[in-house]
Length: 170
Image (cartoon, rainbow, N blue to C red; front, side):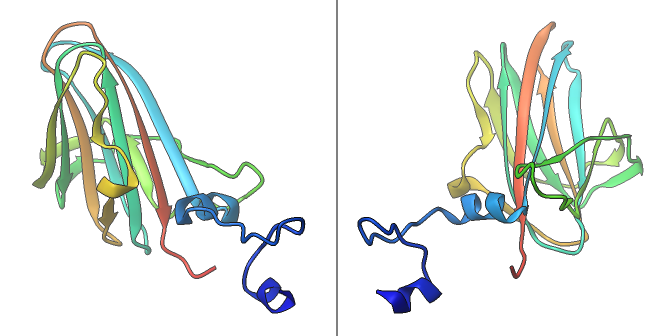
């Protein structure tokens, strides 16, 4: 059993190997990040979020909840004439001082959204987006991505969460 202590964490009482999912490990290692929003949108209004990835590949999930009908889009490789406002992201491990290499902005000025790589209808408190790790996107380093929610009705309350980790060699 002592040989395993070099490779695995285990419970000292039962001898069982302690195992967590990789994403959970990233949280403990200080390499997992989150950003969220809530907004009320008019008909045809959008909530746009620009992701400028850094030097590492990024494993991203995103989900949106809305009171009423709307649409979720995700684009790659667009052109922005202005980034918009810096959008805060946080390390899930509050004991870590690590920061993401990905810069996020809200309300960018879009001249070309880029290639649409995902779309989905949303509404009626239905959770939409690429919600779990089975549907995550692995984003290229040094690339531009845009997440867009477009409301189909007036006074639509929308909230969303983006979660990601960046590939690393801990």
